[in-house]
Length: 566
Ligand code: ADP
Image (cartoon, rainbow, N blue to C red; front, side, top):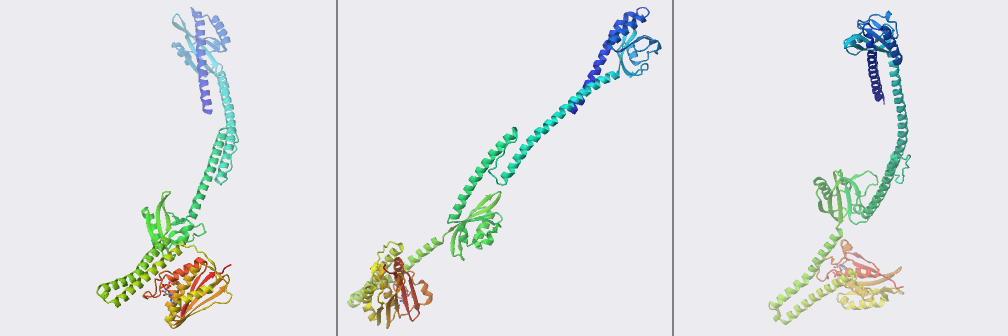
């Protein structure tokens, strides 16, 4: 506004002055036209003065008529007689040369600044005098000042109004924006339910609406993310495989329950992250992780954790994370698979071993028979009996194996019934009478009066007693004794088979009920080592327990429990 006002003032003043000059030139020309006939012959001074006065009245300007020699013939503000020769005035000189002369100067006659315009007065083509019109510049200045004042005033008014309006609008807008900014801060602080109220019906209302829409979608997004995260962490926490996330600095960012259990590592409850290398001491795992970090290539390895007695399959996958690389380590527990594998291998090797000796003995016998022993009937019969025994041994073993496998697989459906122990024990004792007498071993049973009935399947219980008595006789060199006893222990009856045999060295006791386990592997009459395993399985299937007490050289006592009948 200031610049425009300055320009306007300048422009208006220039226009006004050039207009004024033009008007004065016109007036002077008119004056010259009107007065020129009065110069015919000798100038008619009286008429010239009358005309001058008249024009001066109409234009309210000072009018001066000057003769060619510079003598003032008429002047409307002063007495011409008292005025000096004007031939040297610049505007007069210009007019005498035939042009329009203009000048601004303080008049020597009237003592104020005047704006002069002079034109030549021509008569019959030659210049006979000069007509001059003058206006005091003070009057011009006053007009200019009035115009300047008007322009300046309107500039001021418009500026003031603009500033006031701008203040009002800016204030209102900035209040609205401040409220939106305030809401943004609350949103950032976590108040996702907060909404903005627009303060003014302007663009900020649009802003508020857009903001509220953003808040709604932000809330929905956060909710979705939270749901996703919960799902993910539920999956992570319940899955059987271990998952560990390690960042590029080797710090553990995430470790699920399974990983903690598998590695035997506890995630510290401080928020301080911990280095994987400090949490997990296993060299192979550390190598896997650091190679993956270095090469950014997936690494796979099988790791045996000696301290935890575990066997793991570990996969380290590079994770791109904001430009830096982390590692996702997944751990799969192969321990059970390994155990099954080992058990299977052991089983096959045990079965082969147990079959090999009777087969080898049979082959030797058959070869001997082929090589001539067949001709000697007495030897031949003896050899055939040996083959018979070996076949019996193998059949017994295969039967035991089948029995054990049925028991282990849970295929056998027990049908326990209330049962008196005494008749069963007597029966079994009678069965072994001959074998024990042959080795000079006394067999007896001491069952207390009023022993309750037991809940068991008769055939299975018989097999348990037979197996235990068989072992007792087998491992008791005569003379000796074997005693079967029973006592009631709460809701169970505990039966024991005690012998005075060779006993079992203590280091073997924990394994004695495992299948194929034999203290002396070289013993030929020892059986396949399945008898006690069968005993254990039958007893457990009835809901009882087995145990053994033994002293090397003094004898062994095998105990088992059976539930009493209700
Ligand atoms: P086996 O068919 O060899 O008898 P068992 O499973 O019945 O198999 O017994 C396993 C091993 O336990 C036997 O080989 C023997 O070394 C030991 N054992 C079992 N009973 C006795 C016992 N009464 N006295 C000493 N050792 C025994």
